[in-house]
Amino acid sequence: MAAIPPTGNLAVSGAELPWWALIGPALATITSFFTATSVYEAGRLSQMMMDIGVLPREFLLVGVLPYLLAAAITFTPGFLLGGRFPTALLVPALGLMIIGVFLTSFASGGTMLLVGRAISGLGAGVAVGVAVAVVRRIKGPRAVAATAVAALGVLAAVAAPFVNRALSEATSFRIAYLATVLFLFIALFASAVSGIVRAVTANRPTRSGPYGMPYPAPYPAPQHPAPYYPAAPHPPQAPGR
Image 1 (cartoon, rainbow, N blue to C red):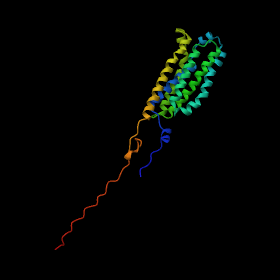
Image 2 (image 1 turned 90 degrees about the vertical axis):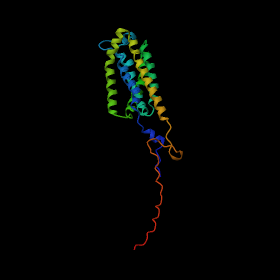
Image 3 (image 1 turned 90 degrees about the horizontal axis):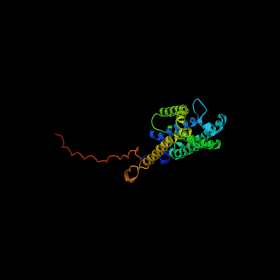
């Protein structure tokens, strides 16, 4: 009797993700680290602080802590659900980050800056949680992927104040901070394409076995025994002399 393959829920729950499913979450995570420290300018009082009119101590309360606290709150749901619903979580998270960047870039006071940074942090926490969850389920060397994403994220956080200072001197802090929107849109596009491709490949019809019963591709078709043919009787032999 042929074995019955596992049900769809059991098979999907432990399914692995392709490596390219990490592109969108990785870009979002790296941009999240960059956005966390890009409000500073290396070596001096930032132009954002002077234009908005807040002191460094006040800037810590309205520009840094809201981002970190909001990210800490939303990291857990992003991590717990990101492995099963990466696109469904990452797309709205990137939308929140884009809204937060716009609010922060055009902030005219401490209240608007606090709201913009908090909204950005909500999306950043989900993005980082989804990236960690996807790394745990991708095919191939997971340790290499996790190390690469973490290293690029730390590098982005360290380089952000210097990049922000150079762009602020050339233009203004608002344009310098708005530059992160480009990378967020790239991450949004990569995540949407990844979700569409995985949805299309997951809905492919399965092969049909004997009697029209479908079975998944990894399971071979049932084997039937070869028909039995009785041996022909031997002709009678003549008695010996």
